[in-house]
Image (cartoon, rainbow, N blue to C red; front, top):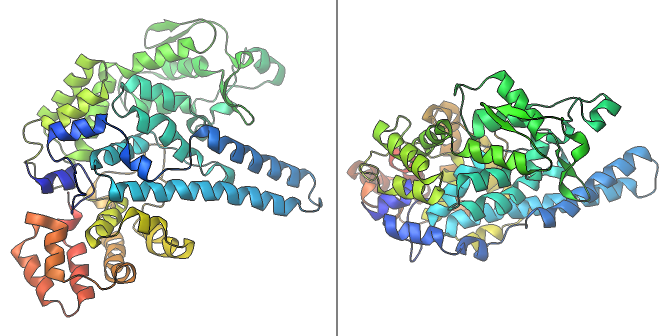
Amino acid sequence: MTDTTAAFRFGYGLPLPQGAPTTPQAMMAALRGPDLASQAHPGGGGIEEVRPLVLAAREARIANKKNPGLPGGAKAQQRTLRATYAVADVFMRATFARALDAPDGLRERLSAFWSDHFTTATRGRFDRALHGAMVEDAIRPNLTATFGTMLQAVTLHPAMLLYLDQDTSIGPNSTRGKKRSKGLNENLARELMELHTLGVGAGYSQTDVREMAELLTGLTYVGNKGFAFDQSRVEPGADVVLGVSYDGNGIEPILAALQDLSVRPETARHIAGKLAVHFVADVPDPGLVEALTAAWRDSGGDLAVVTQTLLTHPGVWDAPPEKARQPFEFIVASFRALGLTGAELIALSHENFTRHVTKRLGEMGQKWHSSPGPDGWPEEPAAWINPLRLASRITFAMEVPGRMVNPLPDPRAFAVTALGERASDGLLLAAARAESLREGVGLVLVSPEFNRR
């Protein structure tokens, strides 16, 4: 158990911020404590702050479409869009700054893990800030809650409802369905079972998916209210999901079903495996997966208990660094090693942030909040360390540090700063012999030691 392992496996690299916890006990204490990174770098607010901007952008778009010749209509639409873009930009910069500065890096890593587990993307230009609001509302406050609590908060959040088209789902035999000949949309029900809880091949049937979709009717989003439950959309009658009947009015049957899904043994094993793969190894120790599954099962999905089991399981701290750093991690770790602060990153002009951060992120294959599907970003190293993506990392390593830091550090000293005891003799020698500071620093950033965690 070393500070370097804590920094790489459960944080965003070296050097560790002052006061950073490095033992399982200290890391859990920090995780249960106040969210210091959010205090230092506030995001764009939750859905109550974001919703009026989304509503204004949508209304301006509709008004401009209905009256294309209306004086100032196009400008009003662009003005409202710029307001939503600005808030989305605040969320993005805050995410980078928190990862860069947070004394409790585990909080940021867990927030990223659950944000990816509950992936959403924007359906339209006016929805760009919704995912950030979901992270603030449903994920960060629930990192040590039960999974059932997080699952309910995420499933009912407008970002998820809109991403998976739940606002278009109407029970065919409901009051509204009969009047408008509308039908079910199974997107949310399917991803809820296949991705968010039980996992692929967990034994549920298409009938279970349809019954879940019928149960979820009533969940919707109304622009001037946000989340809403509309009884007129609800498919009448009881719904039987995985052998359990759910009936009754309002949202309570839905919450009961979500809670039941959260503690199913299939859910425990599915997410235990994902945690082990993300934090430790692409082919994790079966004993670790079993321990996490048991902790989930015995605690009723208490995420604090599960996380503590991950941190204290024998072998986790000694496992070799086999995981490939994804582009977001790579960029944050690079900036941290170079000594940049979150405040400096936030202060970058739009042009420089785009040129040195978001553009590079996309070139490495991880365009901001644009995962290829609702299953999130891939974990396997081949998705990130291949000729095309590696070339983008090399370009970043050779070009960006010199534009962000002046003067560049001595390459050999930089290798020790960035890698601690992981800096091999060969890398230290190569860094010392580099023809320039730029090349020496770049060599460190593209080394296997730096790109594996």
